[in-house]
Length: 536
Image (cartoon, rainbow, N blue to C red):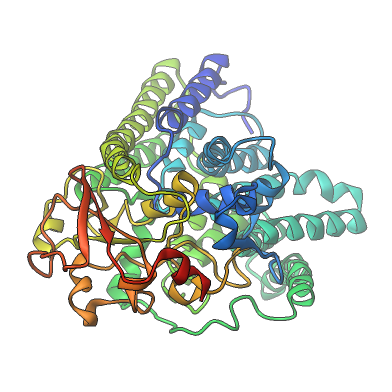
């Protein structure tokens, strides 16, 4: 806590923090559909939950199905609660705002609970509003992290109320967090264990260390209660019925995942931002010793080490390896307090530098987001010709490695992940039509694909197939079988770039309807009428 001998920040620095928060939020306010990787797919599902699934002809394709679902549904439950109150496209942006700001604000709240008082150091927390998991559109995960930190921040106030109230509150928070996202509960268990371990290292005796470790056991064990409730509710391990591989990173890949808190659109820019953060931390650490909460810092260290060994893919989910480093960074920020100096000049200078870094990071993200607006406009323009009730097959000109080496602005995350990957899901709310790649995994998403459309659906989403798969069956995913009779239109994205598999020559069944550069639309001519196709 700040003392009378140390420079105490006036309200001006609190205003700087609020200004930083507003600046970070600006891209969400400027862009109606922020180009977060999974977001269009989540948005389409929220639209269905909010009433779209009951509309004709959408109700022939999709239906709500909450059976056996009890985790990773924070945004879905919110969409259900606010159905017919807040439109899905408005609610989606509100939830993005929460996903963006809750993690740094939660870390600030926990830091204040530990050390007391607001500090200019908190301004740096806003830099970590934009991480890979946010840009990937993992809204439940992001909101869950922020909620976890907020729950942990009130733990100190609950402890004087007695063990019964303390553990009842922890259990209740755990049930809420596992509903939002399972990793939120894992994070909560790690934070509680760190809090119980204590702010200081034990004395140099084995007994003291053993006592500190034993205190962490009940704190972590209380999080098993929500897991047991989950298993009783679903009567199955989430995703247990799903088939698939479990994949692990190589040692080098595991080390690379540790930079996911800085991950965005260009590795060179990300490296400059990371270096700037380290310089600020190093400079601040030279001014005064770092205040640390030993238990929480140890929890952050354990999460960092665990990140090197978790699988990257499981039958239930993917991108598991990129989540723990972000949890570790937020935990480490909350567990430490660096001084920006003890004079007005030092504090003002470092505050200005930190705020500038937050502004530059936000401008960088917004600049890349702005490049996706023409892509969305292009897609919407060609889709204007698609009547309600149609079935649309989304495809792409698959980028080649040479294209990815110098990718267009905003189109890829570090030249690896296409930001437009889930744009086609917007066909559902925009045109009231069917797409095969809507997230609809049984037991994971509260939407199911109705027969016979489930025969040509990929409920996990998956990547967009190359447009050359129309002529080459080896490139076709399973849902493309009999595409000539099962789909009405082909939507091609990234059409203004060459395809990795060669020049595309449209098959005889296709006729071009519209070309808007990035997006092209083809109509499929088939012998059976649409009514006959949909009736079998």
